[in-house]
Image (cartoon, rainbow, N blue to C red; front, side, top):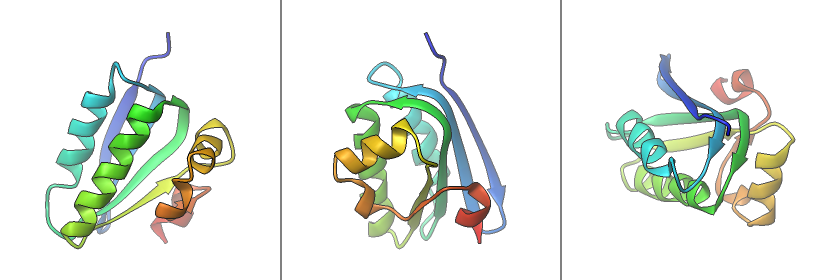
Length: 111
């Protein structure tokens, strides 16, 4: 079983949340809480780093989509870091990739 690890830090005007391990129905509520707290203030610029994520199910994808909609309502933004791999393929297969600005490295997302 792959344990989920979440970290959050500020980088300039952006808030970076890094997820590592697996996001699935069992831990999606913890991910949602962490991301909601990171995006509390209006106009938040959130970067979600999925570089070290090995798996995300549809529940986890739903968390990302709902957060994006919530941020847009409050003039916030959200981008993803998803280098080529399973997570990026899942975003593309579910036709969710066009919703997000997606970068292959954290440094590009923060430029």
